Image (tube, rainbow, N blue to C red):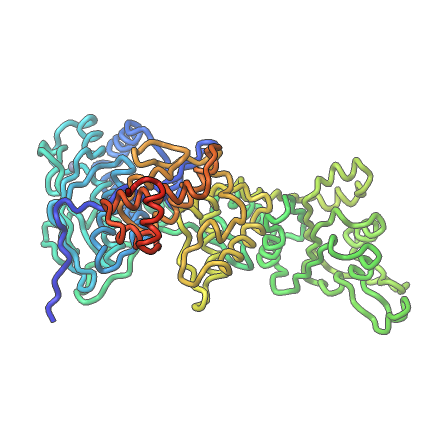
Length: 599
Ligand SMILES: [Zn+2]
Protein backbone atom coordinates (compact mmCIF):
# COMPACT_ATOMS: atom_id res chain seq x y z
CA UNK A 1 0.00 0.00 0.00
CA UNK A 2 1.39 3.38 -0.88
CA UNK A 3 1.22 6.00 1.74
CA UNK A 4 0.91 9.66 0.93
CA UNK A 5 1.96 12.33 3.39
CA UNK A 6 -0.35 15.05 4.69
CA UNK A 7 0.18 18.22 2.67
CA UNK A 8 -0.36 21.73 3.88
CA UNK A 9 -3.00 23.62 1.95
CA UNK A 10 -2.34 27.32 1.50
CA UNK A 11 -4.60 29.44 3.58
CA UNK A 12 -5.42 26.63 5.97
CA UNK A 13 -4.68 28.20 9.32
CA UNK A 14 -6.14 26.71 12.47
CA UNK A 15 -7.76 29.39 14.58
CA UNK A 16 -5.22 30.97 16.91
CA UNK A 17 -7.96 31.79 19.39
CA UNK A 18 -8.02 28.06 20.24
CA UNK A 19 -4.87 28.81 22.19
CA UNK A 20 -6.29 31.73 24.16
CA UNK A 21 -7.92 29.62 26.86
CA UNK A 22 -4.48 28.17 27.64
CA UNK A 23 -3.06 31.58 28.46
CA UNK A 24 -3.86 32.98 31.91
CA UNK A 25 -2.74 36.26 33.39
CA UNK A 26 -2.89 36.75 37.13
CA UNK A 27 -1.37 40.18 37.72
CA UNK A 28 -2.36 40.24 41.38
CA UNK A 29 -0.01 37.36 42.01
CA UNK A 30 2.55 38.20 39.37
CA UNK A 31 1.91 35.07 37.38
CA UNK A 32 1.39 34.27 33.72
CA UNK A 33 0.67 30.71 32.72
CA UNK A 34 0.70 29.03 29.34
CA UNK A 35 -1.23 25.88 30.12
CA UNK A 36 0.58 24.63 33.24
CA UNK A 37 3.87 26.34 32.43
CA UNK A 38 4.78 29.64 34.03
CA UNK A 39 5.75 32.33 31.51
CA UNK A 40 7.48 35.70 31.81
CA UNK A 41 7.15 38.83 29.68
CA UNK A 42 10.48 40.52 29.00
CA UNK A 43 11.38 43.71 27.19
CA UNK A 44 12.83 42.77 23.83
CA UNK A 45 15.72 45.19 24.40
CA UNK A 46 16.66 43.34 27.59
CA UNK A 47 16.95 40.07 25.71
CA UNK A 48 18.98 41.99 23.12
CA UNK A 49 21.37 43.18 25.82
CA UNK A 50 21.69 39.70 27.30
CA UNK A 51 22.33 38.26 23.85
CA UNK A 52 24.95 40.89 23.08
CA UNK A 53 26.73 40.32 26.39
CA UNK A 54 26.72 36.60 25.74
CA UNK A 55 28.23 37.07 22.27
CA UNK A 56 30.79 39.61 23.46
CA UNK A 57 31.93 37.56 26.42
CA UNK A 58 31.78 34.01 25.00
CA UNK A 59 32.04 34.55 21.26
CA UNK A 60 29.50 34.02 18.49
CA UNK A 61 29.94 30.25 18.34
CA UNK A 62 29.33 29.63 22.02
CA UNK A 63 26.49 32.16 22.24
CA UNK A 64 24.80 30.63 19.21
CA UNK A 65 25.09 27.22 20.79
CA UNK A 66 23.54 28.30 24.11
CA UNK A 67 20.69 30.15 22.46
CA UNK A 68 19.96 27.37 19.96
CA UNK A 69 19.75 24.83 22.76
CA UNK A 70 17.57 27.13 24.84
CA UNK A 71 15.27 27.37 21.81
CA UNK A 72 15.31 23.59 21.45
CA UNK A 73 14.21 23.07 25.04
CA UNK A 74 11.55 25.75 24.67
CA UNK A 75 10.24 24.09 21.50
CA UNK A 76 9.93 20.79 23.34
CA UNK A 77 7.89 22.42 26.08
CA UNK A 78 5.68 24.17 23.53
CA UNK A 79 5.07 20.86 21.75
CA UNK A 80 3.55 19.47 24.93
CA UNK A 81 1.13 22.39 25.09
CA UNK A 82 0.34 22.05 21.38
CA UNK A 83 -0.38 18.34 21.59
CA UNK A 84 -2.75 19.04 24.45
CA UNK A 85 -4.63 21.88 22.72
CA UNK A 86 -4.78 20.17 19.33
CA UNK A 87 -4.63 16.47 19.85
CA UNK A 88 -2.55 15.10 17.00
CA UNK A 89 -4.81 12.65 15.19
CA UNK A 90 -4.05 11.74 11.61
CA UNK A 91 -6.26 14.48 10.18
CA UNK A 92 -5.14 17.33 12.34
CA UNK A 93 -1.47 16.44 12.61
CA UNK A 94 -0.47 19.42 10.47
CA UNK A 95 -2.59 21.67 12.69
CA UNK A 96 -0.69 20.40 15.69
CA UNK A 97 2.60 21.17 13.96
CA UNK A 98 1.37 24.61 12.98
CA UNK A 99 0.46 25.29 16.60
CA UNK A 100 4.19 25.66 17.30
CA UNK A 101 4.25 28.63 14.96
CA UNK A 102 1.10 30.07 16.50
CA UNK A 103 2.51 29.80 20.01
CA UNK A 104 5.57 31.71 18.84
CA UNK A 105 3.32 34.38 17.38
CA UNK A 106 1.34 34.56 20.63
CA UNK A 107 4.58 34.96 22.58
CA UNK A 108 5.72 37.82 20.35
CA UNK A 109 8.77 35.96 19.03
CA UNK A 110 7.93 35.91 15.34
CA UNK A 111 5.24 35.11 12.84
CA UNK A 112 5.73 32.08 10.65
CA UNK A 113 4.35 31.88 7.16
CA UNK A 114 4.34 28.37 5.84
CA UNK A 115 5.31 28.04 2.16
CA UNK A 116 5.22 24.27 1.89
CA UNK A 117 4.64 21.67 4.49
CA UNK A 118 4.10 17.95 4.45
CA UNK A 119 4.38 15.34 7.11
CA UNK A 120 3.75 11.68 7.63
CA UNK A 121 3.77 10.71 11.27
CA UNK A 122 3.69 7.03 10.28
CA UNK A 123 6.91 7.04 8.27
CA UNK A 124 8.56 10.01 10.00
CA UNK A 125 8.72 11.94 6.74
CA UNK A 126 8.65 15.71 7.13
CA UNK A 127 9.42 18.66 4.94
CA UNK A 128 8.68 22.26 5.75
CA UNK A 129 9.73 25.58 4.30
CA UNK A 130 8.64 28.80 5.93
CA UNK A 131 9.29 32.49 6.33
CA UNK A 132 9.86 34.05 9.71
CA UNK A 133 8.53 37.54 9.55
CA UNK A 134 9.04 40.04 12.34
CA UNK A 135 11.63 37.83 14.02
CA UNK A 136 12.67 39.70 17.16
CA UNK A 137 16.04 37.98 17.00
CA UNK A 138 17.06 39.35 13.61
CA UNK A 139 15.90 42.75 14.83
CA UNK A 140 18.02 42.78 17.99
CA UNK A 141 20.97 41.31 16.12
CA UNK A 142 20.79 43.98 13.43
CA UNK A 143 20.57 46.76 15.98
CA UNK A 144 23.58 45.40 17.90
CA UNK A 145 25.84 44.29 15.06
CA UNK A 146 24.41 45.42 11.73
CA UNK A 147 24.42 43.09 8.74
CA UNK A 148 26.57 40.03 9.34
CA UNK A 149 27.66 36.91 7.49
CA UNK A 150 25.65 34.32 9.37
CA UNK A 151 21.97 33.81 10.16
CA UNK A 152 20.93 35.23 13.53
CA UNK A 153 17.59 33.60 14.41
CA UNK A 154 19.15 30.98 16.65
CA UNK A 155 16.37 30.77 19.20
CA UNK A 156 13.83 30.35 16.41
CA UNK A 157 15.76 27.59 14.64
CA UNK A 158 16.35 25.77 17.93
CA UNK A 159 12.68 26.13 18.86
CA UNK A 160 11.58 24.74 15.50
CA UNK A 161 13.93 21.76 15.88
CA UNK A 162 12.78 21.06 19.43
CA UNK A 163 9.11 21.48 18.64
CA UNK A 164 9.07 19.31 15.52
CA UNK A 165 11.35 16.66 17.05
CA UNK A 166 8.99 16.27 19.98
CA UNK A 167 5.87 16.12 17.81
CA UNK A 168 7.42 13.70 15.30
CA UNK A 169 9.18 11.55 17.87
CA UNK A 170 12.44 11.76 15.94
CA UNK A 171 15.20 14.26 15.27
CA UNK A 172 14.09 17.09 13.03
CA UNK A 173 16.55 19.85 12.21
CA UNK A 174 15.42 23.35 11.29
CA UNK A 175 18.05 25.38 9.43
CA UNK A 176 17.79 29.05 8.71
CA UNK A 177 18.92 29.40 5.08
CA UNK A 178 18.29 33.14 4.69
CA UNK A 179 18.14 35.83 7.38
CA UNK A 180 17.39 39.53 7.52
CA UNK A 181 20.47 39.87 9.69
CA UNK A 182 22.47 38.75 6.60
CA UNK A 183 20.80 41.35 4.43
CA UNK A 184 18.18 38.99 3.01
CA UNK A 185 14.64 40.27 2.55
CA UNK A 186 13.18 37.69 4.86
CA UNK A 187 14.26 35.00 7.25
CA UNK A 188 13.66 31.58 5.73
CA UNK A 189 13.80 28.22 7.51
CA UNK A 190 13.72 24.65 6.26
CA UNK A 191 12.77 21.64 8.36
CA UNK A 192 13.78 18.07 7.55
CA UNK A 193 14.60 14.95 9.51
CA UNK A 194 18.24 14.91 10.47
CA UNK A 195 19.08 12.03 8.13
CA UNK A 196 17.59 13.91 5.16
CA UNK A 197 20.10 16.73 5.48
CA UNK A 198 23.45 16.69 3.71
CA UNK A 199 26.81 17.62 5.15
CA UNK A 200 25.77 21.29 4.93
CA UNK A 201 23.75 20.82 8.11
CA UNK A 202 26.70 19.56 10.15
CA UNK A 203 27.35 23.06 11.43
CA UNK A 204 23.78 23.51 12.64
CA UNK A 205 23.84 20.12 14.34
CA UNK A 206 26.96 21.19 16.15
CA UNK A 207 25.07 24.04 17.84
CA UNK A 208 22.65 21.56 19.30
CA UNK A 209 25.47 19.44 20.62
CA UNK A 210 27.73 20.46 23.44
CA UNK A 211 30.81 21.53 21.53
CA UNK A 212 34.17 21.92 23.16
CA UNK A 213 33.68 25.62 23.02
CA UNK A 214 30.89 25.51 25.52
CA UNK A 215 32.09 22.57 27.58
CA UNK A 216 33.44 24.70 30.38
CA UNK A 217 30.18 26.60 30.53
CA UNK A 218 27.87 23.64 30.55
CA UNK A 219 29.97 21.91 33.18
CA UNK A 220 28.99 24.67 35.49
CA UNK A 221 25.34 24.28 34.78
CA UNK A 222 23.46 21.53 36.51
CA UNK A 223 22.52 19.72 33.35
CA UNK A 224 24.21 18.94 30.09
CA UNK A 225 21.82 18.78 27.21
CA UNK A 226 22.03 15.39 25.62
CA UNK A 227 24.11 15.52 22.49
CA UNK A 228 22.21 15.04 19.29
CA UNK A 229 23.18 11.76 17.69
CA UNK A 230 23.18 10.59 14.14
CA UNK A 231 20.06 8.51 13.88
CA UNK A 232 19.96 4.98 12.65
CA UNK A 233 17.51 5.31 9.78
CA UNK A 234 14.91 2.85 11.00
CA UNK A 235 14.87 3.79 14.60
CA UNK A 236 13.16 6.70 16.24
CA UNK A 237 15.50 8.32 18.69
CA UNK A 238 15.04 8.92 22.32
CA UNK A 239 14.15 12.55 22.76
CA UNK A 240 16.03 14.83 25.04
CA UNK A 241 13.84 17.84 24.86
CA UNK A 242 13.06 19.41 28.13
CA UNK A 243 14.66 18.90 31.44
CA UNK A 244 12.03 18.11 33.98
CA UNK A 245 12.54 19.87 37.29
CA UNK A 246 13.64 17.73 40.19
CA UNK A 247 10.48 16.13 41.46
CA UNK A 248 10.60 14.39 44.76
CA UNK A 249 8.20 11.59 45.37
CA UNK A 250 10.25 9.62 47.81
CA UNK A 251 7.70 8.81 50.48
CA UNK A 252 4.25 10.07 49.88
CA UNK A 253 3.49 13.32 48.17
CA UNK A 254 6.68 15.23 48.88
CA UNK A 255 6.50 16.87 45.50
CA UNK A 256 7.82 20.22 44.47
CA UNK A 257 10.37 22.27 42.61
CA UNK A 258 9.58 25.82 43.71
CA UNK A 259 12.07 28.02 45.51
CA UNK A 260 9.97 27.85 48.69
CA UNK A 261 9.81 24.07 48.54
CA UNK A 262 13.53 23.76 47.87
CA UNK A 263 14.31 26.01 50.83
CA UNK A 264 12.35 23.64 53.07
CA UNK A 265 13.99 20.55 51.60
CA UNK A 266 17.41 22.12 51.98
CA UNK A 267 16.79 22.55 55.71
CA UNK A 268 15.44 19.01 55.96
CA UNK A 269 18.54 17.62 54.29
CA UNK A 270 20.80 19.60 56.61
CA UNK A 271 19.13 18.52 59.82
CA UNK A 272 18.28 14.94 58.84
CA UNK A 273 21.65 13.27 59.65
CA UNK A 274 21.74 14.79 63.16
CA UNK A 275 19.70 13.77 66.18
CA UNK A 276 18.25 17.24 66.64
CA UNK A 277 14.59 17.64 67.52
CA UNK A 278 12.76 19.24 64.61
CA UNK A 279 9.56 21.27 64.80
CA UNK A 280 7.49 21.65 61.63
CA UNK A 281 5.28 24.71 61.53
CA UNK A 282 2.65 25.60 59.01
CA UNK A 283 -1.03 25.55 58.21
CA UNK A 284 -3.07 22.38 58.18
CA UNK A 285 -2.68 20.26 55.09
CA UNK A 286 0.70 21.57 53.93
CA UNK A 287 2.21 18.09 54.09
CA UNK A 288 4.04 18.20 57.43
CA UNK A 289 3.64 14.46 57.93
CA UNK A 290 5.04 13.57 54.49
CA UNK A 291 8.02 15.85 54.97
CA UNK A 292 8.61 14.37 58.44
CA UNK A 293 8.71 10.90 56.84
CA UNK A 294 11.16 12.19 54.27
CA UNK A 295 13.34 13.60 57.07
CA UNK A 296 13.29 10.19 58.78
CA UNK A 297 14.16 8.44 55.52
CA UNK A 298 17.15 10.72 55.03
CA UNK A 299 18.37 10.27 58.62
CA UNK A 300 20.70 7.61 60.03
CA UNK A 301 17.58 6.03 61.51
CA UNK A 302 16.07 5.64 58.04
CA UNK A 303 16.00 1.83 58.33
CA UNK A 304 14.37 1.92 61.75
CA UNK A 305 10.73 2.59 62.56
CA UNK A 306 8.88 5.82 61.87
CA UNK A 307 6.02 6.03 64.37
CA UNK A 308 3.39 8.69 63.97
CA UNK A 309 0.83 9.93 66.46
CA UNK A 310 -1.73 12.64 65.94
CA UNK A 311 -2.12 14.23 69.37
CA UNK A 312 -5.40 15.87 68.39
CA UNK A 313 -7.01 12.56 67.42
CA UNK A 314 -6.56 10.82 70.77
CA UNK A 315 -8.72 11.66 73.80
CA UNK A 316 -6.82 13.34 76.58
CA UNK A 317 -7.35 10.54 79.11
CA UNK A 318 -5.88 7.95 76.72
CA UNK A 319 -2.94 10.04 75.60
CA UNK A 320 -0.49 8.94 78.30
CA UNK A 321 -1.27 5.26 77.65
CA UNK A 322 -0.76 5.85 73.93
CA UNK A 323 2.57 7.59 74.39
CA UNK A 324 4.10 5.61 77.23
CA UNK A 325 2.28 2.28 77.18
CA UNK A 326 0.35 0.34 79.81
CA UNK A 327 1.59 -2.24 82.29
CA UNK A 328 -0.59 -5.31 82.78
CA UNK A 329 -3.21 -4.64 85.43
CA UNK A 330 -2.72 -0.90 85.37
CA UNK A 331 -6.45 -0.48 85.19
CA UNK A 332 -9.53 -2.67 84.82
CA UNK A 333 -9.34 -4.33 81.46
CA UNK A 334 -5.59 -3.93 81.02
CA UNK A 335 -5.07 -7.67 80.61
CA UNK A 336 -1.82 -7.51 78.78
CA UNK A 337 1.13 -5.21 78.71
CA UNK A 338 0.88 -2.79 75.81
CA UNK A 339 3.91 -0.83 74.63
CA UNK A 340 3.43 2.87 73.93
CA UNK A 341 4.55 4.83 70.88
CA UNK A 342 7.85 5.77 72.48
CA UNK A 343 8.75 2.14 72.97
CA UNK A 344 7.60 1.28 69.44
CA UNK A 345 9.78 4.01 68.05
CA UNK A 346 12.89 2.95 69.96
CA UNK A 347 16.02 3.56 67.79
CA UNK A 348 13.74 5.20 65.26
CA UNK A 349 11.75 8.42 64.93
CA UNK A 350 8.56 9.48 66.70
CA UNK A 351 6.45 12.06 64.88
CA UNK A 352 4.12 13.99 67.18
CA UNK A 353 1.60 15.77 64.97
CA UNK A 354 -0.59 18.59 66.33
CA UNK A 355 1.57 18.77 69.43
CA UNK A 356 -0.10 22.01 70.52
CA UNK A 357 -3.18 20.04 71.56
CA UNK A 358 -1.38 17.94 74.22
CA UNK A 359 -2.68 18.28 77.77
CA UNK A 360 -0.50 20.02 80.34
CA UNK A 361 0.16 16.70 82.18
CA UNK A 362 1.21 14.91 79.00
CA UNK A 363 3.41 17.90 78.11
CA UNK A 364 5.28 17.47 81.41
CA UNK A 365 5.92 13.76 80.82
CA UNK A 366 6.94 14.42 77.24
CA UNK A 367 9.44 17.01 78.42
CA UNK A 368 11.08 14.42 80.63
CA UNK A 369 11.48 11.84 77.81
CA UNK A 370 12.92 14.48 75.53
CA UNK A 371 15.38 15.55 78.23
CA UNK A 372 16.71 12.14 79.28
CA UNK A 373 14.88 9.49 77.29
CA UNK A 374 13.15 8.14 80.40
CA UNK A 375 9.51 7.41 81.22
CA UNK A 376 7.30 5.03 83.16
CA UNK A 377 4.47 3.15 81.47
CA UNK A 378 1.05 3.57 83.03
CA UNK A 379 0.76 1.41 86.16
CA UNK A 380 4.49 0.74 86.33
CA UNK A 381 7.10 2.01 88.73
CA UNK A 382 9.94 0.82 86.53
CA UNK A 383 11.65 3.49 84.50
CA UNK A 384 12.20 2.72 80.86
CA UNK A 385 14.87 4.26 78.69
CA UNK A 386 14.51 4.72 74.97
CA UNK A 387 16.50 6.26 72.13
CA UNK A 388 13.98 8.15 70.03
CA UNK A 389 14.35 11.11 67.73
CA UNK A 390 11.46 13.53 68.09
CA UNK A 391 9.88 15.36 65.19
CA UNK A 392 6.90 17.50 66.17
CA UNK A 393 4.48 19.54 64.15
CA UNK A 394 1.83 22.12 64.83
CA UNK A 395 -0.34 24.60 63.01
CA UNK A 396 -0.67 26.70 66.17
CA UNK A 397 1.58 29.54 67.18
CA UNK A 398 3.21 27.86 70.17
CA UNK A 399 4.66 31.14 71.44
CA UNK A 400 1.15 32.51 71.75
CA UNK A 401 0.07 29.29 73.48
CA UNK A 402 2.92 29.78 75.96
CA UNK A 403 1.75 33.34 76.65
CA UNK A 404 -1.81 32.12 77.10
CA UNK A 405 -0.60 29.46 79.53
CA UNK A 406 -1.74 26.46 77.50
CA UNK A 407 1.70 25.29 76.47
CA UNK A 408 4.72 24.75 78.73
CA UNK A 409 7.48 27.21 78.01
CA UNK A 410 10.24 24.70 78.85
CA UNK A 411 8.77 22.17 76.41
CA UNK A 412 8.47 24.85 73.76
CA UNK A 413 12.19 25.64 74.05
CA UNK A 414 13.03 21.92 73.87
CA UNK A 415 10.99 21.49 70.70
CA UNK A 416 11.90 24.73 69.04
CA UNK A 417 15.56 23.81 68.43
CA UNK A 418 15.23 23.55 64.67
CA UNK A 419 11.91 24.95 63.49
CA UNK A 420 11.04 24.57 59.80
CA UNK A 421 8.15 26.59 58.43
CA UNK A 422 6.37 24.88 55.54
CA UNK A 423 4.72 27.51 53.33
CA UNK A 424 1.07 27.21 52.36
CA UNK A 425 0.30 26.03 48.84
CA UNK A 426 -0.75 29.52 47.69
CA UNK A 427 2.81 30.68 48.39
CA UNK A 428 4.35 27.93 46.31
CA UNK A 429 2.05 28.00 43.31
CA UNK A 430 4.89 26.95 41.03
CA UNK A 431 4.49 23.49 42.54
CA UNK A 432 0.82 23.19 41.65
CA UNK A 433 1.40 21.76 38.13
CA UNK A 434 3.78 19.13 39.55
CA UNK A 435 1.38 18.24 42.34
CA UNK A 436 -1.42 18.03 39.82
CA UNK A 437 0.55 15.59 37.65
CA UNK A 438 1.39 13.55 40.70
CA UNK A 439 -2.21 13.43 41.92
CA UNK A 440 -3.64 12.61 38.49
CA UNK A 441 -1.20 9.71 38.29
CA UNK A 442 -2.05 8.64 41.80
CA UNK A 443 -5.83 8.71 41.43
CA UNK A 444 -6.32 8.22 37.72
CA UNK A 445 -3.31 6.10 36.95
CA UNK A 446 -4.86 2.66 36.74
CA UNK A 447 -6.13 1.68 33.34
CA UNK A 448 -9.77 1.55 34.31
CA UNK A 449 -9.98 5.17 35.32
CA UNK A 450 -7.51 6.82 33.05
CA UNK A 451 -7.96 10.58 33.21
CA UNK A 452 -7.17 12.57 30.11
CA UNK A 453 -5.62 15.56 31.84
CA UNK A 454 -7.63 18.65 32.72
CA UNK A 455 -9.46 21.24 30.63
CA UNK A 456 -8.06 24.76 30.27
CA UNK A 457 -10.81 26.16 32.50
CA UNK A 458 -10.15 23.57 35.19
CA UNK A 459 -6.44 24.22 35.05
CA UNK A 460 -7.05 27.95 35.38
CA UNK A 461 -9.20 27.33 38.43
CA UNK A 462 -6.64 24.99 40.00
CA UNK A 463 -3.74 27.37 39.40
CA UNK A 464 -5.54 30.35 40.82
CA UNK A 465 -7.60 28.95 43.65
CA UNK A 466 -6.41 30.02 47.11
CA UNK A 467 -6.33 26.43 48.48
CA UNK A 468 -7.01 27.35 52.13
CA UNK A 469 -6.79 23.62 52.96
CA UNK A 470 -3.47 23.37 51.11
CA UNK A 471 -2.17 20.13 49.57
CA UNK A 472 -4.65 17.99 51.49
CA UNK A 473 -7.56 19.99 50.06
CA UNK A 474 -6.10 19.83 46.57
CA UNK A 475 -5.66 16.09 46.89
CA UNK A 476 -9.29 15.67 48.01
CA UNK A 477 -10.53 17.86 45.15
CA UNK A 478 -8.54 15.93 42.53
CA UNK A 479 -9.53 12.56 43.95
CA UNK A 480 -13.20 13.57 43.92
CA UNK A 481 -12.82 14.99 40.40
CA UNK A 482 -11.35 11.73 39.12
CA UNK A 483 -14.29 9.82 40.58
CA UNK A 484 -16.86 12.23 39.13
CA UNK A 485 -15.38 12.39 35.64
CA UNK A 486 -16.00 9.71 33.06
CA UNK A 487 -13.04 7.54 32.12
CA UNK A 488 -10.97 9.05 29.31
CA UNK A 489 -12.59 12.42 29.87
CA UNK A 490 -10.52 15.42 30.98
CA UNK A 491 -11.30 16.84 34.41
CA UNK A 492 -13.41 19.95 34.17
CA UNK A 493 -14.30 22.64 36.69
CA UNK A 494 -17.64 21.01 37.37
CA UNK A 495 -15.84 17.82 38.49
CA UNK A 496 -13.58 19.72 40.84
CA UNK A 497 -15.51 22.51 42.48
CA UNK A 498 -19.08 22.24 43.51
CA UNK A 499 -19.29 26.02 43.64
CA UNK A 500 -18.57 28.59 40.96
CA UNK A 501 -15.14 28.76 39.33
CA UNK A 502 -13.08 29.98 42.24
CA UNK A 503 -11.59 33.44 42.00
CA UNK A 504 -12.17 33.64 38.30
CA UNK A 505 -13.94 36.96 38.47
CA UNK A 506 -11.31 38.67 40.57
CA UNK A 507 -7.81 38.00 39.46
CA UNK A 508 -7.68 36.12 36.24
CA UNK A 509 -7.40 37.70 32.86
CA UNK A 510 -7.32 35.94 29.54
CA UNK A 511 -7.19 36.93 25.89
CA UNK A 512 -10.47 37.58 24.20
CA UNK A 513 -11.12 37.20 20.50
CA UNK A 514 -9.79 40.68 19.85
CA UNK A 515 -6.51 39.74 21.50
CA UNK A 516 -7.24 42.05 24.42
CA UNK A 517 -6.72 41.08 28.01
CA UNK A 518 -10.15 40.60 29.38
CA UNK A 519 -11.88 39.47 32.53
CA UNK A 520 -14.21 37.55 30.28
CA UNK A 521 -12.05 35.36 28.10
CA UNK A 522 -15.32 33.76 27.12
CA UNK A 523 -15.46 36.32 24.34
CA UNK A 524 -13.57 33.56 22.57
CA UNK A 525 -16.89 31.96 21.95
CA UNK A 526 -17.75 34.67 19.50
CA UNK A 527 -14.70 34.04 17.38
CA UNK A 528 -14.73 30.32 17.80
CA UNK A 529 -14.33 28.13 14.77
CA UNK A 530 -11.97 25.40 15.74
CA UNK A 531 -11.48 22.73 18.33
CA UNK A 532 -14.75 21.42 19.74
CA UNK A 533 -13.08 20.73 23.10
CA UNK A 534 -12.39 24.40 23.56
CA UNK A 535 -16.02 25.32 23.29
CA UNK A 536 -16.96 23.34 26.35
CA UNK A 537 -14.70 25.51 28.46
CA UNK A 538 -15.79 28.69 26.74
CA UNK A 539 -19.42 27.79 27.18
CA UNK A 540 -18.96 27.30 30.90
CA UNK A 541 -17.10 30.59 31.11
CA UNK A 542 -19.69 32.29 28.99
CA UNK A 543 -22.40 31.11 31.33
CA UNK A 544 -20.36 31.99 34.42
CA UNK A 545 -19.73 35.48 33.12
CA UNK A 546 -23.32 35.93 32.10
CA UNK A 547 -24.32 35.22 35.68
CA UNK A 548 -21.55 37.36 37.13
CA UNK A 549 -22.42 40.31 34.92
CA UNK A 550 -25.09 41.08 37.48
CA UNK A 551 -27.72 41.64 34.83
CA UNK A 552 -30.88 39.63 35.06
CA UNK A 553 -31.03 36.77 32.60
CA UNK A 554 -33.61 34.10 32.51
CA UNK A 555 -32.78 30.54 31.61
CA UNK A 556 -34.85 30.91 28.47
CA UNK A 557 -32.93 33.98 27.34
CA UNK A 558 -29.71 31.98 27.36
CA UNK A 559 -31.43 29.26 25.36
CA UNK A 560 -32.77 31.85 22.93
CA UNK A 561 -29.26 33.22 22.43
CA UNK A 562 -28.03 29.73 21.53
CA UNK A 563 -30.90 29.26 19.07
CA UNK A 564 -30.15 32.62 17.44
CA UNK A 565 -26.45 31.79 17.14
CA UNK A 566 -27.11 28.35 15.67
CA UNK A 567 -29.67 29.63 13.16
CA UNK A 568 -27.33 32.41 12.13
CA UNK A 569 -24.36 30.06 11.83
CA UNK A 570 -26.29 27.62 9.64
CA UNK A 571 -27.75 30.46 7.57
CA UNK A 572 -31.24 29.44 8.53
CA UNK A 573 -30.86 25.70 8.01
CA UNK A 574 -32.97 24.52 10.94
CA UNK A 575 -32.04 20.85 10.54
CA UNK A 576 -28.36 21.72 10.84
CA UNK A 577 -29.03 24.08 13.73
CA UNK A 578 -30.91 21.28 15.47
CA UNK A 579 -27.93 18.93 15.04
CA UNK A 580 -25.61 21.51 16.57
CA UNK A 581 -27.87 22.05 19.56
CA UNK A 582 -28.84 18.43 20.07
CA UNK A 583 -32.54 19.28 19.57
CA UNK A 584 -35.10 18.07 17.06
CA UNK A 585 -35.82 20.23 14.01
CA UNK A 586 -39.31 20.87 15.33
CA UNK A 587 -38.00 22.06 18.66
CA UNK A 588 -35.68 24.53 16.95
CA UNK A 589 -38.43 25.71 14.64
CA UNK A 590 -40.80 26.21 17.55
CA UNK A 591 -38.27 28.26 19.49
CA UNK A 592 -37.08 30.19 16.45
CA UNK A 593 -40.65 31.22 15.76
CA UNK A 594 -41.15 32.17 19.36
CA UNK A 595 -38.24 34.59 19.29
CA UNK A 596 -39.29 36.00 15.98
CA UNK A 597 -36.66 34.40 13.77
CA UNK A 598 -39.29 32.71 11.59
CA UNK A 599 -42.69 33.86 10.71
ZN1 LIG B 1 16.66 35.45 10.72
